[in-house]
Image (cartoon, rainbow, N blue to C red; front, side, top):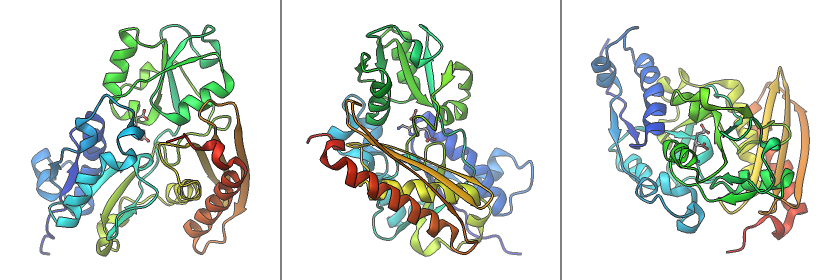
Length: 322
Ligand SMILES: NCc1[nH]cc(CCC(=O)O)c1CC(=O)O
């Protein structure tokens, strides 16, 4: 059997991105025929990692939304995909804008990691136990709004940067506590730093949090190797969550939480949007039984419906002023 050409994986240089791409690299190589227990060199021969620097990696000190939103970490990678310099890219699904450039698709979603937000602090064990007026470090509008909803007395301090940077800022005392995705901590081997978790039913995480996604050119969506990395329950749940994001025109300017869970054929979902100061929260619950036909399509429709309801109720209050 002739070996098929290698699948070149575009990867950002950040530790988290390299860890995530490395996780998928071994699985993609295996799907392409790399033997079990293949060496690093063999894996590279089947599925080489191609480093790509994005504008998001170069700009570290301003609010993401001020400098152009979610596309910042994906623009250069998507150019490389469209130019044919790479064949796929591994992203955190929650960093992907609601709409992709023409010609590119989110082709496969592997098993989701822990979707929850982790609370990290040297002051106390839980967000609820922070002293009055304590400083919570986050650059996420959703985490800010959800925290202020339960604890309006907290002071939010802008804490940008990658996971290591944010942890270092906590150590330096720039904040009393921070919130980070547990999935990212786990992938970096830092899961033990977590003191407690935010209840994901009380405060739903970002749409798609904890899930990776493989982006490819549209014409490659049928490639056999993609089947080997797809996870059906995750694909269905994140379709619903992305639906909510689409309906809410999700960007870094809106605090949106969405959580879909699958129990057999039963898909349950919570969608919420908040005003930036957390004072108002608009949420909807929904549940459907999947038909066993186009399950992802039905999930997407549920997310779109609940998202549209939240959008209609929240109106302009949920948008951060320009
Ligand atoms: N916005 C940064 C970002 N993008 C993806 C992750 C990791 C979480 C994931 O897998 O969804 C993180 C870190 C964080 O939010 O703490």
